[in-house]
Amino acid sequence: MRPPFLLGYGTNGFGDHPLHTALDVLDDVGYDAVALTLGFPHLDPFAPGAPTEVAALRAHLARMRGGRGAAVVVETGTRYLLDPLHKHRPTLVDRDASLRIRFLERAVEIAAELDARCVSFFSGILPDDASPADGWARLRDRIPPLARYAGERGVRLAIEPEPGMLVETVDDALRLLAEAGEPPELGITVDVGHCLVVEPGGVEGALRAAAPHLSNVQLDDMPRSHHEHRPFGEGEIDLPLVLATLADIGYTGVAAVELPRHSHDAPRLALAGRTALLRAWASVTGTPTSERTVP
Image 1 (cartoon, rainbow, N blue to C red):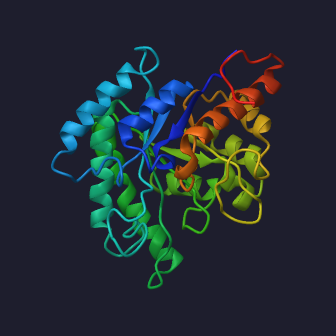
Image 2: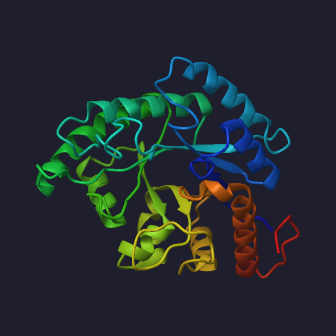
């Protein structure tokens, strides 16, 4: 019995592989979906050849899963694409966010071409020259036009709460949705590892609070003490609880493993990650798994 949501893996965990090779590995392992991080080293959305690369990527995704096609979500967490000296800058809470906004628009355009489930993004860390009120005002002004841009192209956006950022928790994300007028194109991404670090209600509380707007899920293990993505079994996540909660709230979107600092061991971890997920799901349903796993 397979879970009702689509198990995927993030390309930011395959930084030492060409993109199409990474997709072949993920297809061989048996993933249903891909979380595509735009930017180095795989797909620079601003490169002159990007349209050709996107068309080739669309064809490759369609061939996966024996021709049934793999689902895709577009991630925008690449570190130095917009500024080679400052990680993630500029963000939506910086004074000048024009380059970030154009990047997100390009992500929406690419997502539309790929029929992606959503474009996931974050608020950013508040700069030293801004107050929280400044940051919230900037988000309130900038989110609605982005949502309209996405909606006009049939694309959904999903804000991801990140430890240390202005939008840090699911409650923060819900506040942003409300203050932005709850545009129908705007949802929420939940990284389950983050929940251990910043969510008062833990993973289950965060997923249930986000459920009406949940558009994307990232899966990883993590210690409760700090923000560090780890393979399953190397942190404190209760993986069966995560999967059972997703099923109970009726989530049917992509749930993708995110290990952005583990490219050195990507093929093994991709298979090990899917094995852990299938075993956790089997423990939820009480049925044995018959799919390919690792010991």
